[in-house]
Image (cartoon, rainbow, N blue to C red; front, side, top):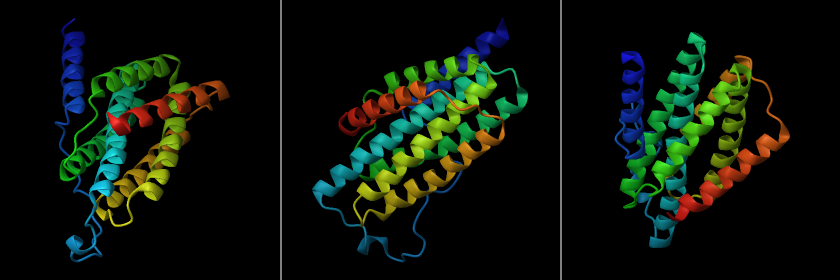
Length: 214
């Protein structure tokens, strides 16, 4: 019983830290090292700053959801190797969470006010995917990361050209997400049915449109 209670307390603690942006990155904030004086290249107009903040808020919500998904899937599997893989991916996603939170502060903005809802929903989906079996759970990771990759590609096109700070973060995030998807595929992922993939895409669209503003 104590083990169950300990796990519950641990998950609540992690959820609170993820939702309220109290995580610390284990890797340095990505930067464009080739630019010696960023101040000469990153001045944003008020409109550009608000737009960049909206996009980075969406990215931050994505990382809140990633924490919930990976931790739920780690709880749902009985395979110790997968538990380790899911937890390692969650740790890297924790860097993304910290980086996007910091960038929002730099842009004089804030995380989504709906983060508790995003986290709870993603955690529930992660548990459902995990309980469906390891191949399905891994397939959920593959599809999620594929959609996230496409989403980040679109943000690289939509971010202001001179917002090099946000671009550096998004590019590193994209690199990590691709690797996570490839690792899940190699671990034995099964493809998800088309209706499930479509539903995931629709839910992601709802989240991105809402998080951009709230």
